[in-house]
Length: 412
Image 1 (spheres, rainbow, N blue to C red):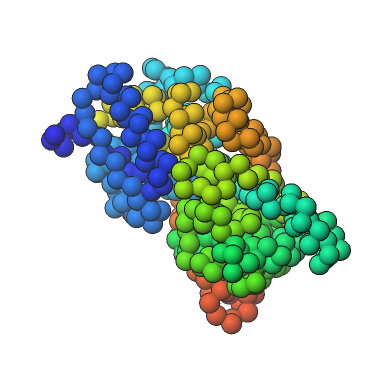
Image 2 (tube, rainbow, N blue to C red; image 1 turned 90 degrees about the horizontal axis):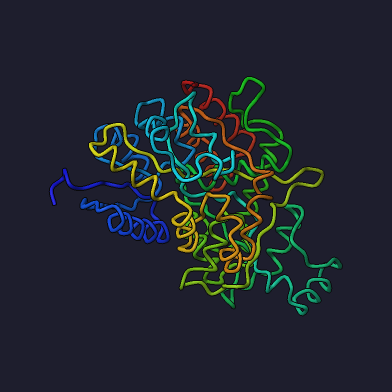
């Protein structure tokens, strides 16, 4: 087929996303009579960002549809990369729009009366663990014998590390926990922010400016550094993994617990490669003693490029893709549907028995600040975390230098 007959879709690389989208497109063509071809190109985070935003792929017509994460949304919108969906929605809204979704999944993409995208994939960060290990009476007795306290879902970060060391058994290819330390401007940034928030810290000051040289930030990075480098507790590939690889390691049964996106828990129940099906549960994140739990609400959107030559067909597909049936399909493939109907679906909860906990997790979830230069800020934070992990420089000094770099960036 010619370029005119092809819809090009930039996809966040992840097997369940790819398989679900292909099934949706096939159904869309079968039900609507659409004869266009869909070229779906899966890309890792850095390449996806570069292709759709830095290289202006959404503006120049190279991409018709793209997955855009809320981290990038403000930048994509303010640079004119995204089509305003509001007129199309007003003319022909998606099923149950907007009441079919939680407000927490509709706010980031609203700019005045404009709407920059539709919810694709959700799942706040949470504590994911092997309930079969935690509920095993022999493990409980052994832990009590060692520590004099019951084995339980960790309530504090110190307890998290203690439990991780207890379950760390390299000879069994089982490690206490696993992280995503790959430097892509996302994974370590999210971990740092979560450590900060669960210590009562804030990412921005009273004027809305990003500030990472506070006492809580220093404490957060110091703890994260020693934890990630703790060979008696952490999977040895943690510094090389991004979140998908981290999730797959957990699904293979290589870790007792992890802090990751909810979707990587549900994935364990539906993918063929999972060795822990039926053995997983989720809970809120631990917090520093005296502080409260927090989570991070980052979600993915379906967006249409402002330069697309197939805007109407692209919207028709997006409207189809977010209906109740396809939101559930995405979930059963291993993604996380965004509709309230999916969260409460009896069939979904029969397969993923903790799916209903999404609502509870959202109660402590926060959003990252919306900045047109957030990607630059995130890379500065990423560099700071890597400097802490890979050098002997004092964490306070590293964060002071990072704060100076952030201050020099053009603020939005």
